[in-house]
Length: 112
Image 1 (cartoon, rainbow, N blue to C red):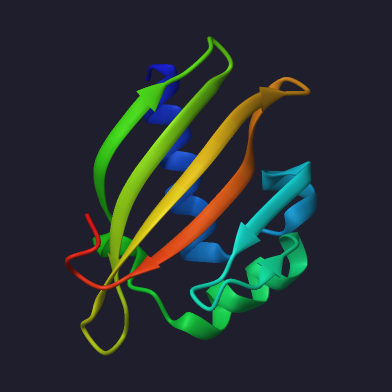
Image 2: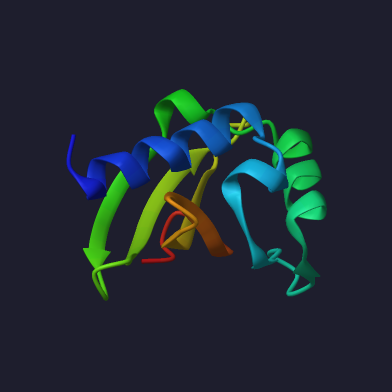
């Protein structure tokens, strides 16, 4: 498995299991909810759990390597009601593993 595939697999694990902040997120992780509110790792995890995303149906749109230690992902995930949500995340290789540093929700099927 190459680095891009590892990052996507880690993202899917976060989506499916609401993996706790201490193991998947960078210390300076930040996310922005659809309403624009900033979220820390614990708040983000709680939002994932309440959103009832269909993580098994998440679809990677693109994955781009920035520096050798970073990847940016864009992906779509269906919610329980069938609506698609678009997400972007930044992953960095830190402390010998890939850690999520940033996440943003972009609402709507036509967001990209």
